[in-house]
Image (cartoon, rainbow, N blue to C red; front, side, top):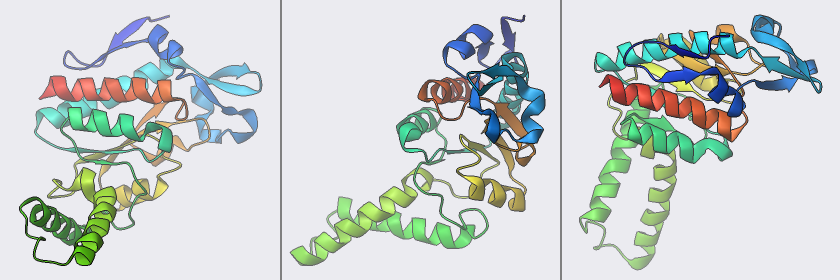
Length: 235
């Protein structure tokens, strides 16, 4: 068994043992298997499919090499992870990587109607600036309260993409099944997708699949940290 592999001299080192400790190999119950994931399954334990980590390592290498090349060319990757248990890890790793992110519900049209989304983001930034510079002080207390509520709603929607002035060059999706709308929009706009693919997902939905557990926090953290490390080393 290959214990350690490396995608590129700039990429993060991958360890089969570390991936196993992080639980990347645990898939879903056998009844939920997507037929196209069969090549990535090595066995069954307690009625749960076990993902072949050697194959995960090889696919992960390809994904990291793609990310490394993209970042070295000055291009951007949008992180998408809207599951409650992983939101903060997605946000912190995206911020460390200086990349945009989406951790709340995917807004339909973020890619396919980007001009409209960009106008809303601009309004959010202007309102945020007015509050910071005292531009809202001329309003009544009730009106300022309404502005604060509006700002909070806009912040939840747009905080992670407020500096994204154009469509990203790629999107990194932590759960393709949950954020299938993001994947579909990316496909329509020709944006490359790196995606974590559990045993219940069609790997053909993305260009760079990472066959792995997309539910366990430890698994998602491991993947996020390797992607973030690769991005930081490639700049």
